[in-house]
Image 1 (cartoon, rainbow, N blue to C red):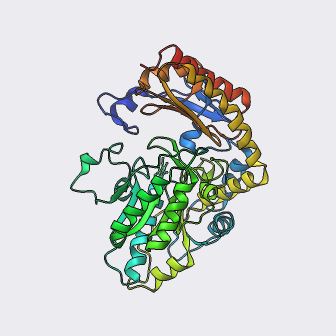
Image 2 (cartoon, protein in one colour):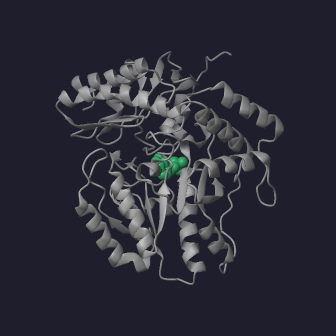
Image 3 (cartoon, protein in one colour):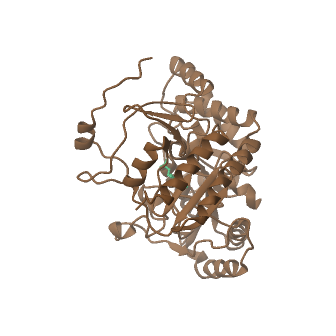
Length: 430
Ligand code: PMP
């Protein structure tokens, strides 16, 4: 295959919006011609070791032959067909697998097309459930600060109000109950004051609250906070005590990233509703799912509306379902937990960054490594430096982090973490 391409960067700059950018003063974008394994190839000739797994989704790396074969086969059979009034084997196979690998009580699956939409569906499920029970006061959500759940409006309304710039949309966004972000860190001692504080919030607000929504164990885009499993356990207990549903957003943490298949397993709890996405298709296609219990699904279905009011055009897209099945099989057929443990070992090389000024904290969990600086990073400058070092790392705020594909070798991780060390040491981030 000829990988040489002319990429019209002028057109891109004039007409195409990239994520979270200005149209008049955009950050540079790097033209990519192709990807393979854990490498990203630029039109300018560089080959970059990927530390991001395409926003945490490409767990098997790029161009995996098993995933490609699954997609080729499905394209030849049926790329898409509407899901209203129709069903198909790829969706059935996938939902069987999801019911099998997620917590036992999650039995009913809604397939959607992105993480944010899975969160919207979860919120609808919670609201509709309480309405179906004749309870009309439960119209709000409760959630910790520093969370991130997506960019659509309902999802955004439960993101950290400062990080997600709620002020831009105030008056339009629903107002929810924010509780303090988890403080006690994973692997350290749990401060029971956090449990008392949570209990006070539940006692004060439960009558208005349909659900508590939280990213289990790792608050991701809101700050890469690895928090204590006891916090989530406490939330589960309070949700049960006060008749508040628990929505766990596993979109970033699911499929092994934290060392467990799903991060809720660190706390040995089961949510009432769970969202998954990102790595679901091994980073090849956009697909997400919202799972819930029999009790909630039956409640909704026997309520006044009688149906769950959601149905996206590409719901259950067969191509995405087929590759998701292949990705899940690929993951569970290998000793993924051992591979994550090896990556965690390799990521510990980031700890040498603690000796540098401007480094506030270094932490790792599963296949996630984070270097937190004292000041925000100049993304344009540091990214240019990373390219010169042959790595793809995209920091945000004060955080330089790695969420590499699981196929990365120790040598790859060493190259990535060395580039991060040198970027900080050489002040390429200011
Ligand atoms: N929830 C979490 C925890 C996420 O990390 C993200 C994406 N970063 C989303 C929801 C939204 O997913 P998507 O970008 O696919 O809409």
